[in-house]
Image 1 (cartoon, each protein chain N blue to C red):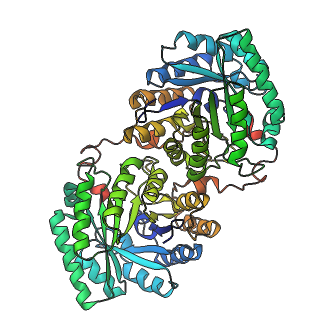
Image 2: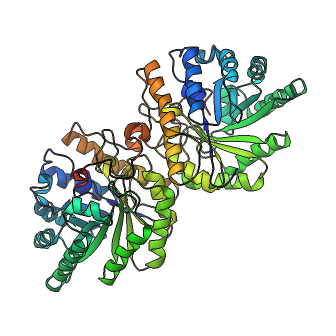
Image 3: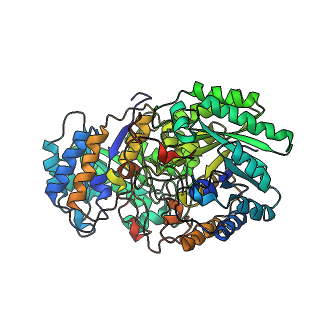
Length: 318
Length: 318
């Protein structure tokens, strides 16, 4: 990838939906996928193969994978989240061969989140990788949660995360994600962590998954970009994330990410008008949805003459 | 100023109030000032000496200046905005000797905003500077609006802004502000512009005034910081800005700026709990106020153990 390009990985269909209790009809998910693809997004996380008991929203994971596979143009990458080997098996059986297993780099968060120690999670990852014997086309990604802070343990030292990356690397994994699960990260830490990872592992494709909990989503993405990260997760409308507080923002909004990067001359390949169709559509499906996206609120600027007719709104402003 | 320090200049009492039509009682403004000072903010724009016909909100400018002067501890800088010589005269007569005259670097925006060409604005600035003969303690700052884009002219070339800075410098001005009046700036442009200014004029104290219209306020502040800007304007609650679109955000929120910088280990001198008292107080004065601040919405994180008891909210999150 060139320096002036980024890939925005769209996670609305997974992270954006996972906290929505009302079941979103499968056809609506598929239509959302169509709109997301039509906007030019080239990497899409389509669902999660989690237990339907834990998250009933994803009980249609296999159907979504099968339907969207037929609609995926060349050059567009689709993936699914898996919590364990069982999820991986369900994924490959449904025809999904790019899966991401997530574990927390914080021991206590991992125990709370997936009821396993991190060592047990690494063992589970090895078992998932063994599936490659039967399914040579399987690509396994590793996602690391709480890289930039944990609600139980606070700050996590970069060396801890690097330890996980080294283990994943030795297992042959070349696609890894670092997540700010609860929105604790700041641009300085994000830049330092990303720089350490990119420098030690130039052969790995790292992505960053940021929550905009305290408004730092874009600033943190900018810091990650400056450190060399070229894959940035976003969710249509800023959905998802950790809604532990009322009013909390979710994932960094895809619209805002696209706007920031495009304005900086960094290509995303995304057409903003087409992208906004996705949020408009979802608002019809789920009328009470609350977006958190500056671009959805305000719109993209029209650079010349069209915003105000007489400039009066700027009176005495600076 | 050291590399790991910034000054947040609080502009709520000026920019934050100027678009509020209901008159905020003078005592409430003074109480806000008290709370702002108590939070540790060291630079405060207290009012605007604009015509009361244009903005009735500031008809008490002289009273605010006189009352707050008595309450200003050593080391805290207060200033006022002036649109013209008349404003400067009213300011000094009220005892305010630090004034900022604003002009747009975009010709058409300046004509719309202050009904003058920029050449006429420079002439007005010279007349304001002549007041120094009578008031040697007068400090005149120059503010540049629309540096990062104009609703009429679109992008403004850095060379245009540098031309203004050179003129101000020749007039002896050493305190200048660059404003993203309509929230058109992006981190790349902000960094480039700031770097050019700081490099050519190391003796000038530059401040940056950013509007968070499209969510880029913090990212742009980060970029400005990286370019060497150490004075960042913010408004309590993210008030102010250019409300040209419903839902548009105002100035970058002081709370969010303080949070970002402090988290990065860059000292602001501000106590967050005390700062939040100011927005809480103003909400009692003006019940329908709509803040735009992630920290006000979500709160600051408690790093260890206190946010969730069982981590269940993070279930399957990454």
